[in-house]
Image (cartoon, rainbow, N blue to C red):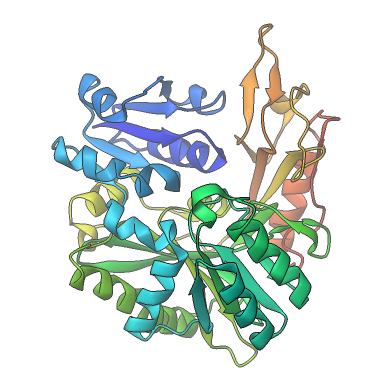
Length: 415
């Protein structure tokens, strides 16, 4: 079959490699792709992805990032009679509106932090002063991973609410905020596939959000991850499916918005071992996807196609027992002011790991240069997290990129 992959980051490079390896994949197109994806797919400039899919006789569209899903791309693809891996705009509100997600969770009895929604700053400020700190302030809409503040003081929370509601820091995405209690425990990324009827667990990972070693410094889009998450036992997985994932999927279906695609639950596992929902995303995590797929023994193209066509119960996942770990290499200055344009060399020398492109371009001379904050993902596997960690960092050290940096402790909790 012909497949069109939407996106240009490290997540999409991981997806492209797995899709291209499938014997079912006759042709793989990527819009817009990146220099790494171009090695396994044909990159196309598609202002209109639906027209692009029709032009190339695409049988399946796989949507990587969240913004096109929230904007209704999956609906438009389905209307053109083409199978698509990704939820409708109605179901994608789980990520597009944090207020919608919290309200649905409350209606479905999903365990999540106490919260309130505000469009008025004075009302939000009064609530924050009543709840005290620590407290979490979230812009309601998509904010490129920058709309969440875990405030350690009341003043910090007030400043976050003011920035969103009064100063327009996040534009329309911050016209409303969610203020919620701060959960305590260990964070886990949990994934499930759903074809509109059937829902199945699809692995776990643990992301490292803060920029500095020991989980210090500002939050980022993710500095690395490993899989499987050490706290995700079979018993905990069953509780997550029963208490969080299935009630949410059933709640969406009851609203007339059946979920098709991958449901990503950001969880907090409390000291008693109970899972609490932090947030839902409606696509694979980045960089979690980069450690899930190396452990997948099933055929990804077959799996996502079956999911898109309502046949998820007919495919086998076949997970490896090995661990996978990815290290994000970022441009100096990230996450505040990443430096762009620095030359990257030596990728051809890397052994024992997979290097995925997350934010690269070719300059006029053909050199590979940094074009964003998170630029490369270096992923390795091993019989345990410590071995995968050692192999990943050995590969990092083979890359010649003075303009980049990385955390040196990815996987430290498990390794």
